[in-house]
Image (cartoon, rainbow, N blue to C red; front, side, top):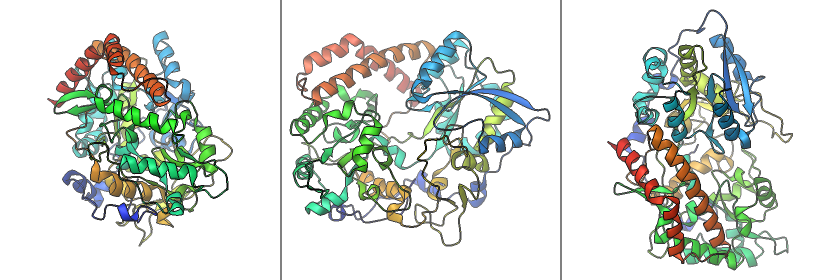
Length: 553
């Protein structure tokens, strides 16, 4: 999601003037031929002369799955009708687990690819080993030509992340070469109008960062005459530790594991984690970091954002903590991505998750399915470009259109398509146009960046994301050698890792909350590490290491 080069208000003097280039692989992806970009489906339609039905479970996600324009279009194309089982987002994994345990589940599980309803590779491996999710290997050569001819040749990682430790493939991938998503857990958005109002430059060190927050607290940067500013805040779904721990310690997203010279390493086991927690505790004690970051919900943080009370907050986009209005400059577009600040070592760094957007958990077929070959072909058809863009954006010439001559994409190159602005959905009603991003689909780098940046580029989310990540984060990003490929576990390993990870992650989250809010001493490391030992951290890291060695070899 992104584009060209803009000067960030309030950040100009500290911005990186010479943006780094793309890697050779990224450059090759962006130079795809027009013929490759079309990616017409390699299936003959309809898939079946006689109408067939597939039963599919999906998360709700604000979608009317049954009365949906893409559902109708794809049924007309394939002659396959879908009976939907829709589960509410917050209870989706619980409901799925209950149905899988009871034996009462549908033919297909689709769209469980995001938190809080994420079907992890660990779980897929476990149910695959039990035969609940069927192996697809024998079906892919004949019934998945789009996957084999379009997806895997351009993204060989797809083959890797689909294949479990037993050599079987139980799920189909979602490939979305989303540049900014590689920094999802590392983005901190700062209110640049507040910087300008106070005559501040963007901070480059932790001391300057604290001074900025102090000025936000006392300088009335929102200009309402009240001391109501919240200098730094967050909420549990988008926590702070990715950005705020980085000055002290490389910190990926939960479960906070990275590759240190071939060794699987947990951020929270390192001394830098304690230093970061102590720094955050200091910010909280001075009223610069909201203690509600561990308890408030999205509605509460958005109320602060919409009232111009937030100075800085993490999030994949600004819409996490406030209302946005695409194409229309406003309060939301005053927030820009902040470059990392240097910690005690003087190093500025952010973690880059190179395979963040390549998921292998979007589509599994269960042993209840009467026609797995049809199910594979039905899913594979979604990798064709016309199906992908409709499934994600909606109806052509209603929700999106072909780009016009002269329109530029997010990356400043000629655009291929443009979103058509839609009225804000203030009613909360389900949308009827697309499946959002909850099905198999395939978007390479050029697909993403060739979306037209319509209107004011400084009020275009994709442009702000691309340029913010490219100019502010990429110069300080870790390399692929620090990233961990998604692990592949045996069925027994998967079950054990799942159990261990649950208790360890819960403990680390609980302790971080206590430390940041001043109820525990971050520097009292021995009890913290001893408790981790009692929870099985050594076994957990050993299992992760075994899985990493398996994938890397």
